[in-house]
Amino acid sequence: PLNAWSHVAMTYDQFTGALQLYVNGARVANRIIAPGQGVDGSSASLMIGPGGLNTSFSQAGDLLLIDEVKVSDIARSSMALAKSAMLP
Image 1: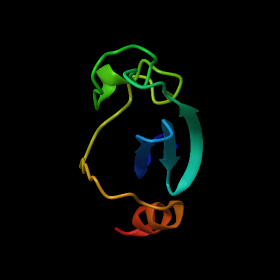
Image 2 (image 1 turned 120 degrees about the horizontal axis):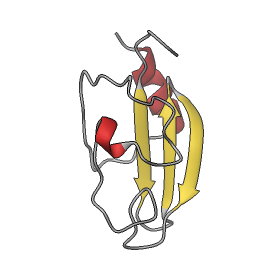
Image 3 (image 1 turned 30 degrees about the vertical axis):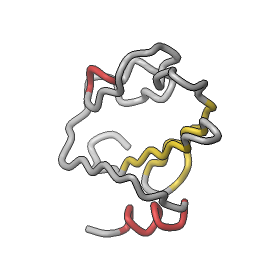
Image 4 (image 1 turned 120 degrees about the vertical axis):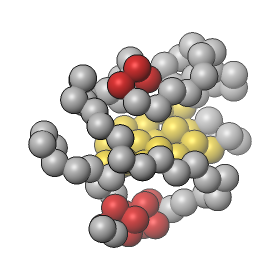
């Protein structure tokens, strides 16, 4: 939402190629990525921030401010992501 904090999470399954995007605990987008491809279908590295939003997942335009970034190698369920979105 505009002018509001949002919890954004992305999951990737290296075995199936499934990439899923969650906003405030709700899945809003998903796609399958072929091995060796980036989020946008290229071989570019993943970028976090306004410069990295040139994908079909982009809805924020130039109005993105990042407060905190966490990267984990532990699989998270959609329920766990929803719970994280509710934490202050």
